[in-house]
Image (cartoon, rainbow, N blue to C red; front, side, top):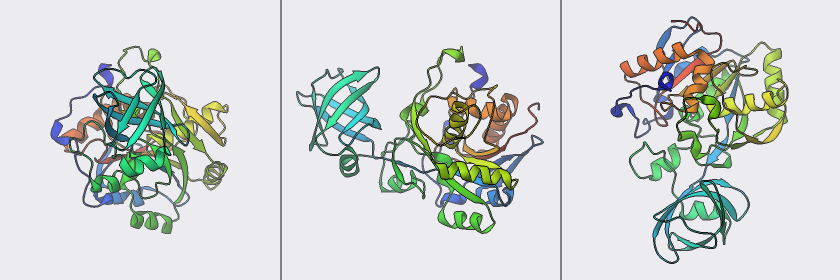
Length: 343
């Protein structure tokens, strides 16, 4: 795992968003493998008419709740996936694991029943609709490396401006840099856009712990790729435009569908456990916008698969030296396929 590790000064972990979304920095790695420090709004000049931006329109839910067992004992619940109107799979932190049949009292207001357990996740039954309950009593589930409690600013800024479909427990963070003004300017330039939905799970923050990557079990995430998105990709191809994925979640949705259908992008809705690592056979994505990712993470491996391990390693070293901001509230990169992989 040493190839996918790096040492990051803790003061480069962004704890708060920039004052405005598009004020972030953008590290551009061009097709010659050169590293250019830019502002995020320079993305307008890096894209061409007929290029297609593919956004993930998932909406972060207020997935974290606190409470106690009916018999006592403090607990923390983090919803992983909403499975029905009144049911969800969740992580439950407690001094002792709650057995099946346990009643949990959340926010001193809601009673939740433990129906079962599968691996690390508990199957919970709410007495009211899950999404309504979370919206009223829940807290924005900020990543573990952000050290302040979620507040009203986080409720707004840890969410893309185009978020639509509720279900994610972590933001598709590359999209956080886009505001309405930037989106309008991109559209005026003739740059097209479309959407996928992939509900990001808490597993996105988990490192790969086995040196043998073939043994890593990828976390499952639900996604949908609509016929309109397939048509937009086909049209971009016909017009000579590039498919530019905004974030690794958009990448996984696009490439998952293509891999499942023998290289042909096809409308689909279901789970993906696609683990993109060096050697991956790319079918759809030509370029991507992405934030900087955690050491030893599957997302760092995805970036390495796209631009090459050597290029990625030097890019991260450059970003650290140039004091880019890292992770969810941090800065971004613009990566193009076809890079020189040798530095």
